[in-house]
Image 1 (cartoon, rainbow, N blue to C red):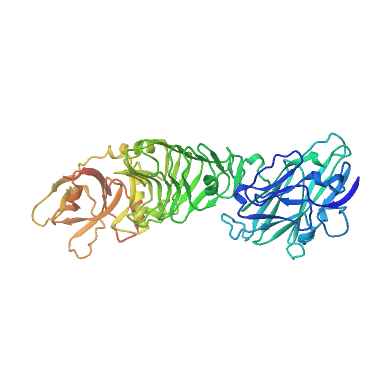
Image 2 (tube, helix red, strand yellow):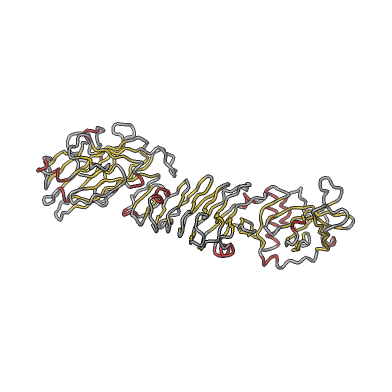
Length: 559
């Protein structure tokens, strides 16, 4: 074969990727989502490179032939650009491209200053090159070939080189901001292959934590975000959504820090096959759905204090929305007065929702001991809370209170009840505690036989309260204590509101009577009472050791 150094035979896209359908061209482009991150520039000394007036650089392989005065024809080898040393390197694995704009086929510049979602401890971004689409019309041996040699910042201490041939791909890891990758291109044609018979697509993309493969035909991997409908790859979910059309399918294979607003009707946002991506945001809303017929499937959405995982308030009344097989992780919520929310349903006439097979998670260690717990679903008449409770999983448990589904500790037995109270007191607040979800099967088995009477008026009754009297003979008064600012003895008591919240009280022992007070605002509510010989000022772990002889647990309705 003949050997020549010449200009390049390719199309370089400096903006959004566009494949040029030309039988005589190789197309080199940047995926749409990486267009703002990367810049392709032709070598200034390559005469066969020219602009096409639309931000792309076009190089015609016909100009590499003898007729184009480039001295390249069938059965030839040409190096487009220069490598260190003379001529074509005999060992490509040790080749290095020169860092001279006038002596390279092209260079690629990294313009990305920040790397969202990068967790490898480095400041650079990964850049992938894919030659898997390159085709050569040749049936003879040896086959023709196209090879790219790229050197990052030639001559620097951190200089590295990757060599990639047609049918394969490579990744330049942790390329720093403003770094430049200089490329030379080696073309070899068999004796029956014209230069114009080499054609296809070379693609670049940038992203954090790229592992080993550039997605082929825009299939998602653990390092990609793909619009499957349009066959495009992206480095952020928002840019994928912004470029989507009605009914598009976007698959996610990588974690992301940052919010997503969906304003495209009929869009499906789902985890890629084999992927378990997590999306999180420090405040506000992680995924904001502002269009109809949207589906979010298979994602893990994390939300802490002051943050909502998914807001469907922007869905039109009576329109459809589907949230399926997701994990709404609120475990970072610490029990503030602005708790984490899983789904914010909004207000209106209702939506046609499919909210099923999701897992809602909260951390009881974080919400016990105070009056605030994460809200799994916040609704104002738009969704069916009963159906959501039956068709999803809630960890540790769930309690419906008015228009809310709150995170709560499930209780189905006396032992679980006393243990929950133990954990709640251990967490700190001896007045207003966390939320418990007492099952109907458990409370249905409780009666009020130990409740002697209730008084709504009379001497010594504080205004705005109901006095509840307990049969004193049912109480083991051992280890009674004296409440602060009272002369009477007392034993510890707690009652659970219909909302699931625990409130703690002193059960007063005076003149052979045992009683406590509840606000009359709870009139008509069914409360569940626990009274025992535990001391609120002592180690709360003693609650868990109480036997049926030490504690009474009763259901009663406030008059």
